[in-house]
Image 1 (cartoon, one colour):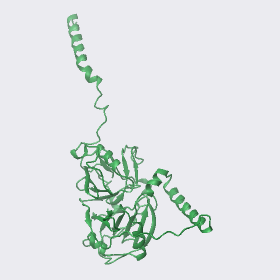
Image 2 (image 1 turned 120 degrees about the vertical axis):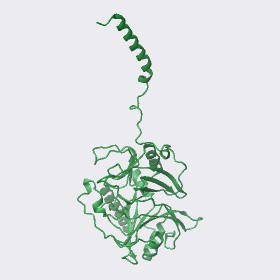
Image 3 (image 1 turned 60 degrees about the vertical axis):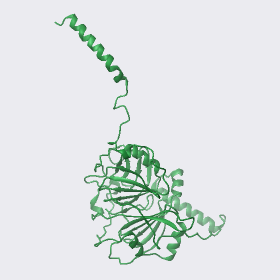
Image 4 (image 1 turned 45 degrees about the horizontal axis):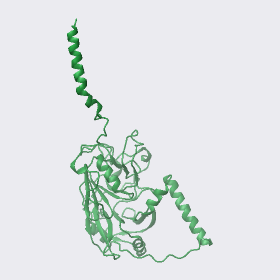
Amino acid sequence: MPSSQSYSGRASALSLAAILLAPLLSAPSAEARPRSYTRERPESVAAAPQRQPDGPLQIVISIGSQRLWVYDKNGLLESSTISTGVGGYPTPMGVFAVIDKEQTHYSNIYGGASMPFMQRLTMSGVAMHSGMVTGRPASHGCIRLPHPFAIKLYKLTRLGVRVVIAPNEPVPQEITHARLFVRKPAPPAEPIDPGSAKGIVIVTATDMTAAVANAKVGKITAERAAELQKLPISVLVSKADGKVIVRHGFRQVYEAPAVIRDPDRPLGTHVYTALEFKDGDNAMRWQAVSVPASGQSVASSRKVSRASRNEAEPPYPMASGPPSTAAEALDRIELPQEAQDRISEMLSPGTSLIVSDHGHNREMRAVGTDFIVLTR
């Protein structure tokens, strides 16, 4: 049997261990502290932007290099390492916009998975959000951001911010072209007596149109409605649809036929962003970024949410030959004069013009999204 002396020695040792461990036990444990969602990189540690943004923002995401860049009218603003989709859930490529934002969000597709600082790009579940970032594909199609950078980006953006997702690393370039829109003052509106028969019809039709649109997207808050009303217009010239279409506040407001010269030649996909008026004039400073196609069919490249699986994805032929450059694409477009005038009257900084071979797809809804152009 152990002696009383050995018991005493053990008690003394235990007492000493308790004294030494007390400060460690009283401090918050590593698990109790806020956990990092990423392997921190130098470019993503600061939660505040390196400088204040100026003018319209544009986000460019590269699948190949697993990076994201934020540009404003003065050039590069921020960048970060990311993780995109893997396996049977690749991140779709093309032209998107932020269509919803939620600081606290849980996935309704993947078992309530947490998606903090979520910025939605499609109705089928693709979004930018905080998550585990490895610098390699790792998600079910979303763009995962390091947690500090996700907070920073969430604070920088608003609804409608343009997002380009490409296989390579396209960089926005300043462009000057005679066919880019120039601001044209709108003619004075005809005064309408709201009490007259014509006035009542116009007001009623406007209210009914808004009510139908709201019903299609569900409940819309007054705050969201006001934010959408402040958005600049978006313009799409689609070779596949043969149309020029204008959206404002995630709703179509105008369309007209569009003619593309040399229709058998690839047009490519190009995004032109109006940055600011030049010297107080009606001329606009423009920036362009071209999005290369991946060479894969949209329909066979990505699994989509349950809500969209029964919707047929219209196929499009794979064009042969090199696509037009951003300047060459503008040279090939012919729009009716009325369409040019209408768009010029609505032009403002932040307006985006998308020119593409592609057209309607299952991600671009009639109401509730901006233009979504899938290049894969």
